[in-house]
Image (cartoon, rainbow, N blue to C red; front, side, top):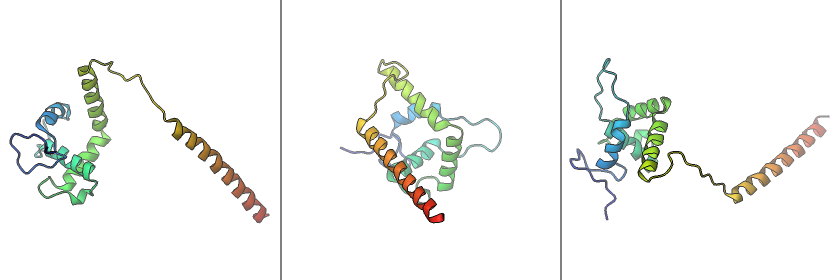
Amino acid sequence: MSRLPTIENPQRKPYPSDLSDAEWAILKPLLPTPKGFGHPVEVDFREILNAIFYVQRTGCQWEMLPHDLPPYTTVYGYFQKWQRKGIWQLLHDQVRHQLRQDLGRDEQSTVASADSQSVKTTEKKGRSTALMVVKRLKGVSAISL
């Protein structure tokens, strides 16, 4: 069983992190469109997303992107621009909304969960940290007098 995505006409050998044709069909209409003025867009947004997902999946530095993906400066520039404009949150929300609609669920999730172990641990750690700070402060004030 291959982990490579299904791509009809690949321009290069695909990576496991690449978008499949079905995934690209979902994301393409959600991406910002060119405004119609200024310098024309010469990059393939699918390849930009493939490069961003490659970095996210592998954990490599931007400068370590493979040479068959767009230049890291271009990829990182789009990543920052879309983050600043809230495009990533918008993509996430719209895809989640579509998925919940397709599954016949309410558009907004009404369930939340909390792990009681982490709550207990955090509570205990908070008290012990506060006591240590108080002890240190008493020690510092006694020395400084």
